[in-house]
Amino acid sequence: MTVIDSLPTRTDQQMNPAHIHPEKLTDAGASPTTTNPDVLTWVEEVAALTQPDYIHWCSGTQDEWSLLAEELVATGTLIPLNKNLRPGSFLARSHPNDVARVEDRTFISTERETDAGPTNNWVAPDEMRQTLKPLFSGSMRGRTMYVVPFSMGPVGGDISQLGIQLTDSPYAVLNMRIMTRMGQLAMDHITPGIEWVKTVHSVGAPLLNDADDVEWPCNDTKYICHFPETLEVWSFGSGYGGNALLSKKCFALRIATVMARKDGWLAEHMLLLKLTSPAGKVFHIAAAFPSACGKTNLAMLKPTLPGWNVETIGDDIAWLRPGTDGQLRAINPEAGFFGVAPGTGYDTNPVAMNSIWGNTIFTNVALTDDGDVWWEGMTKTPPAHAIDWQGNDWTPDSGRLAAHPNSRFTVPIKQCPTLAEEWNESDGVPIDAILFGGRRATNVPLVTESLDWKHGVFMGATVSSEKTAAQEGTVGELRRDPFGMLPFCGYNMADYWSHWLSMGELLGDKAPRIFQVNWFRKGDDGRFLWPGFGENTRVLEWVVRRVSGEVEGRAVSVGTVPAPGELNLEGMTIPERDLEELFTVDPELWLAECDLTEAYFAQFGDRIPTALREQLADLHERLERSAHE
Ligand code: OXD
Ligand code: MN
Image (cartoon, rainbow, N blue to C red; front, side, top):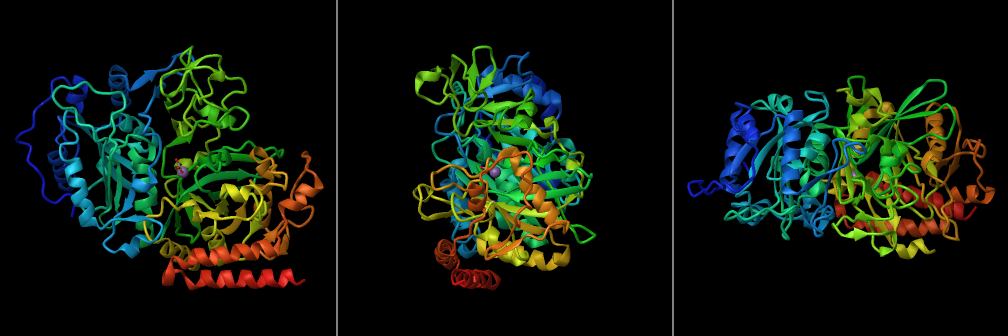
């Protein structure tokens, strides 16, 4: 069943001669590129509803990309950057009301509300269909509907999945070609009877009566809708990021979590990295953090410890599945980075800076006078003049940001100078350790190993960051972001935890070890206690030495932390007091946190797995004991 049941006919459709459409594209992509009747029927149905002037079947070639880019330059959506400074690159400026994912407009439509759970916005599928139908009806008039076939993961790979995005945004098409394996090969694999995900995207801005287009068409009404039971996404009104590149958060996380639960794998908001020791021993680490906690920086870390090497596999999403040898293996389903620009600079993330030398789409950053890009944090000295992300003159003393805080670069992963050669392996890489991290000013040590898988799942389930009040000193309200998945889990979060627990049972003694990390602990004076960035290698080193059985650790009530002397601090100076504080576990503060966790769990009612309740009770007991020691 598709989302839209009864569809208007196309008999009243007018061709819009004013619409710019490259003839070459029409020639190349006017005819269907598949004979799969499921695809043909679906494309016809969506076209009949949305009434585009043209349908373009994307081949995924470089020529097609260049033609689309040319079209977008002609309509003013893309500004070509200086070919000498940033070859093959463009700047886009979005509408000021369309600058980020819209979580309050993001919906999970399952037949039963409880299957979406208390952390998702739920609307019944029938009701959502009735809401979407008039919005999508005629929404692509005057535009081209692009048929974008793509694979998440290597095409045909064991852990990969296929999808098609129908979109009226050529900007989204260009980004999708960077972010996914997009094109004919993917379409050839979408054969009758196989599972694939249907995604439909309209910016919701039909071009009527020869009207001129705007640079960034979008609609004030936005709906990002997921139908996990029929593997569909319908997104209306936004052209930005995760709202428009439906392969990313919508498919690779929200829909994929549901597919993964059904088929015994995991779809996670995790970076993937390869770590090689000075002795040449290789480890693979998956790490889950909430948004804006530095996943890209960790994935591209420049080690400060001599002889250690970090290579990048993914910076945002990982799909993990037990291999034939029973080990958990992971792929990065994406083929590009959609990175946050502000804060990315040669001092904080030189690898990212060296990745975006060209062939990059920048969105909502500033344009310099020499035709390059700039954002806060890119260089220590700002340019004396630039055009800001809204197209206005900007100088350092203008009192405004030059780049939007959520401005982005979209770049092919192949341009990453630290890309691991295994990044494209269809059966993924074996995972040795999983890290969970939040942004905690208090309580959570720099690194703690879980006692076992169940305790590790408890650590993941309780990932959180303090709200501002607490960052000022007291343990206050915690913003929970379990597994960094709060906005991305397509089903009931408590069931997701049960799934993680059952994966632990399946993996048995082959399960990777689980650790909690926290780069963000602060002293009483509000100072970060740990320098982070490249120095985080020291934490990774301890993690893999634990995995290899080379260090004992020290048992504390919240898990196992490095014993004195185990954290390699060679070549680094850190005050003894700061080091102590980084690992302090205050039982009273932790007991208060346990009460908050109990209240948090309560919202999931009976669905909360018994094992997690037991973990909370055990932690409570260990803390009580240590409080009385
Ligand atoms: C992202 C996010 O864009 O997590 O990756 O919001
Ligand atoms: Mn993310």
